[in-house]
Image (cartoon, rainbow, N blue to C red; front, side):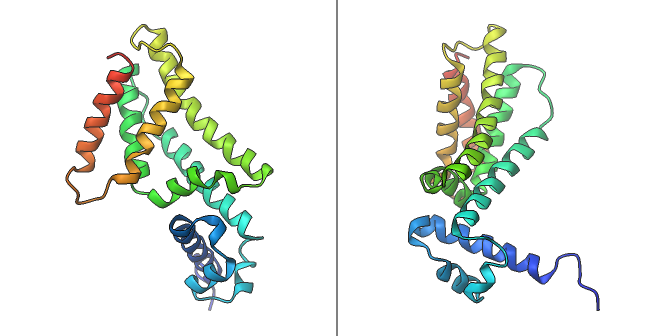
Length: 195
């Protein structure tokens, strides 16, 4: 019988990445061993090395996947007619995308220090691309006289940090719906650019 499109190897690879993501987010990269990841998946340690070179490569792959997915999703947003609409769209997009991926967000920000230089450069380039997309949006609004910002690069860093912070406290079924959180943060973002 022929293998189906999603092979056992692909499924195992996915399970390894999911387990590593959970364990790194819960305990921190430095505290998690390949043996723990294997136990979480229910495979022998040697099986991990059929899917990844080592723990460092696994961490980099998780960060790379998160940021690549983020940039791909951002590219799929419809073009906005004006900077205000684009900023509101970015705000809502950022919150919704990240709220569904709190472990990946945590790892992508908190475990940068554990990346080896070449892996750090790769991940940092993806992070910069995302930050620059917001900076260009802010430049657009400032250049049209709609946003009051002395430094759009600094503003982009600040806004991303504020929006990403939602993942540290938001829980589905909590006091505020995600729609309400997006609306409140949208108002704060608009005020921060002088609207």
